[in-house]
Length: 446
Image (cartoon, rainbow, N blue to C red):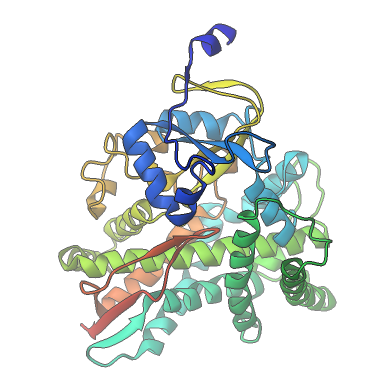
């Protein structure tokens, strides 16, 4: 390794502002800046952020890795690339130590305990629930010819009801609206904290810290009340919803159950991950189908035939162009070589589906919406496409999300023709990728 390190090249990258480095460019247009960096400098790109030199709080190097081979290395060698990164620390402050944010032995125990709840066979039990909620969305729209709707708002309502019913059963009419109000606020506050150059402890009574405390206390109160109510019911922990299964779940190696605090933290993770990312992915996919009526009609023709492959392919292509989880962070724990470049220890390493999903070596004409890329056998490397992450920390809810998205897509397109050809889609990279405003579409009955 010493010889390999000595022969490795320094990572290239743009210089940016003479005093602030790439900070202004990344703040003004993060997605555009990293895509430009890839096109100009290749598969490994360094961005200096902040002052030319100084302590890490005001001067830091961030290295982006874009080639699937390098991404494979980053995601599958956790002893070298850890999750000791600011994004996860901030999420931990907001939603506790659930599966998304916990580390080490605690995470391994949680993963072993929860994995059996998300096998394809277990997830298939939610098919009827998803179909019911998709039908509810279609019926509630009740549009007249030429009605304009906000697809993002529609998808948010659908995904929150699906995850709410999956978690808590049918008693969600009071809970869902409150959670739907809180989740976007939580995301905005987390992003604002992530962009702070110096992160003051939340125990300091700053206006932002007080607001974070209020939102966190409210979401905990909602979930704690549901959990307490479930504990108070005779046999309540044995319900067939996900909360009941969390009560009953045990680590297959030790027989240890989840604590009440761990159950609450898992619920918060499922609400955040299962609502925000899926609703955005659905809205993006529907917008793309509305811009390509010929593809939309092919997808409609496949609905109800028993062959849902094209419907699923449309969802996957939508997430290729607009991956809700657009970047993931790691920290190098030692000096390491990636794709021939030297990355020093204690360097933030970022992998970005937003860029890799547009890598022309693996995606010809990468900006074109073409679901056929996902039909049949694919010869691409594993990490040319990774909207659900990868390695041991891959998203446990992948099967659930894909089933949920195809259910809504099928129900909506079977009833309505979607037209977005006159609409522009603008996105903003928050904690996840979100539409910058309403995702307007004109719907007409088929």
